[in-house]
Image (cartoon, rainbow, N blue to C red):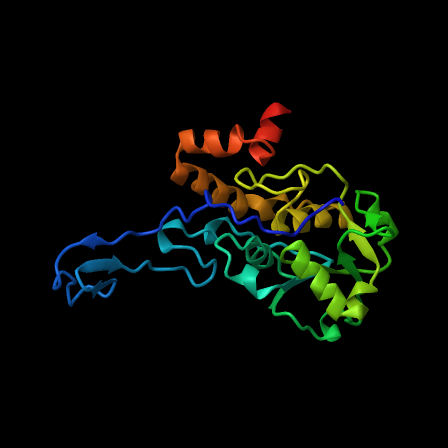
Length: 254
């Protein structure tokens, strides 16, 4: 099917900076320390979060997020469940593109993709879907593309199309089957499943062959590296590199 927007809920991909409370007595929380709150005998340290990338301030990704221009407009339709996901790669993608929007919900107005001056296309597999390659830029040179990207599980995406016939009727584009992912800590049934940020970067590279959008993946690569470091090399090898069907094992074998 080419690409998948499902987000595998990997138990090993925990937040690398999660703070744990320590037993310290009922009055252990200092009144002049706003980052600490006491509940009973447990002191909970509240993490300071970056409002932009929504990562802990100590692991902020903003310095790695580019500001890329694109002729193509990217419109991400995100299921609410995905907005609460720890990795949320769609948000990172939109932050790195000047001509991109992120909309969270289950019902959307067609005005989001019916924009004057753009030719809307849906990034989703289908029998009539055009496979995006570098040659695609020649075919679409006359009209800037408005690329609609569903962000959710396969079930979420199918529900989205079922509830929005006009969206489902858009011309579809997809990525070549077998495209490798950088998502080394992910397990999914489809071996070619990509994260949303990867799907967007690869699509833009195909649609605008005179530019390169690989810089969009810099914060994503750093995020994955941090997750691997947090779990430790031994655990990563056991649960990802050596696990049947894992992304890391597939890449290791190749």
